[in-house]
Image (cartoon, rainbow, N blue to C red):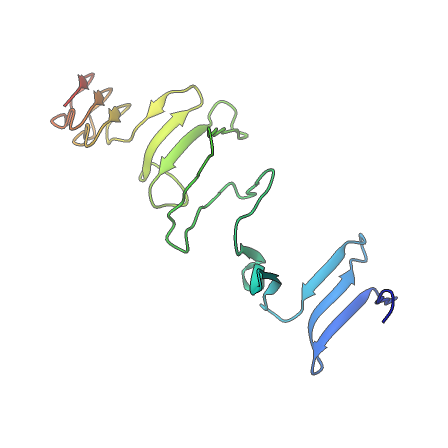
Length: 193
């Protein structure tokens, strides 16, 4: 065929069928003129494939049984990344071992609608961080919080202050094994081994 192949349907839809069963559709959204590519079979994924160095690859898969969750075969390059639910999860093949690698410096900025009450938090083994799994917190004013059963204790170092219980308050322990004997004491400052 010389020139172009033109699919022109006044109804706005091009239907793709297999033995009479519709499997896909190309159409125009009648409300706003958006261009639509649709997988028509319930829960059937939509894949974009190509050839990389002679090998067939699936560049991206849209999982229609999971509301269109996208799985990319390799890296994603973008000027920004926005998570509408506020959660950015780094998952290494289901192991949840996430790595953030910055070529030079890494800036983390927390900015929410809770003016003056934002904090940067690191938690353990949970999607939502709370008082039961928080490991480290930096509040908007720069103050640092490390968890203990007591109140406003700062622990920096391997096992530092690991015996502080409820009632042990306002202690600062810095260094390997520092302050391990403190349980319910208050206002102690220990530095070193």
